[in-house]
Amino acid sequence: MAETRIGVLGCGGRMGRMLVAEIAASEGCILSGGSARPGSPLVGSALGGGLAVTDSPEALIGASDVVIDFTAPEASAAHAALAARLATPIVIGTSGLAAEHERAVREAARQVAVVWAANTSLGVNLLLGLVEQVAGRLGPEWDIEIVEMHHRGKVDAPSGTALALGRVAAAARGTRLDEVAQRGRDGITGPRRRGDIGFAALRGGDAVGDHHVVFAGTGERLELVHRATNRAIYATGAVRAARWLIGRPAGLYGMKDVLGL
Image: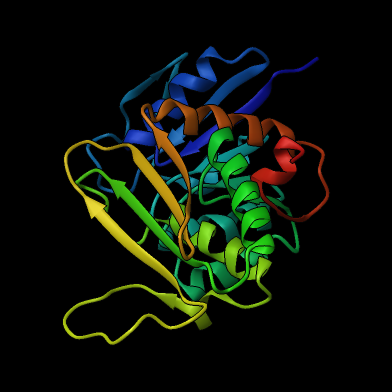
């Protein structure tokens, strides 16, 4: 069986470097190349195997069976459009996408297979399923609070994973997250609204990613927690998603599809 040629968009970032290493270590996979933004000192540097970092995402996407993107929202939206035009499946793990970026990803998925995931770890995706189940069984008299902590360098808050947890909880209760989200409290806020889903974002040190979902009732509390201690779990999941995409019809997929959950 031919090896799957996987390209890494944004190969010089923390996740990009881990993806390059994961692809190299994965049986049945071969690194087709990596890209960095134009003007980056990484452009032209060696990736191994005779490959060099390119500043042309179009060239990289065209040379790959599938590409993985953990870059920035605007770049991910542009990469999704390029992947659609070149008929190359793409895995997008970038967080902090605004509405216009999400629209670009959904539009691309009309032409090519796309895995779009706030988090590519197995544990977090199991947590999403548990939160959906618990939220659907417990009524609105149980308050939901989502607390996440990440390293000091993370630029968006709440995390994409925290928002994904909020979305599945809201959907399980028959509502939309933007109708019930409470994303900040300060000063005299008044009592908590029934049915709200609250968020708290902590930043500090080198925390890889902690997510804590609290269901607070009267006289009892249920808490579901996932703690990531190594970013390699995200790279492993993303490469698994990339291989899964090969041969899939155009459409928007998630890690739930990849993992068969």
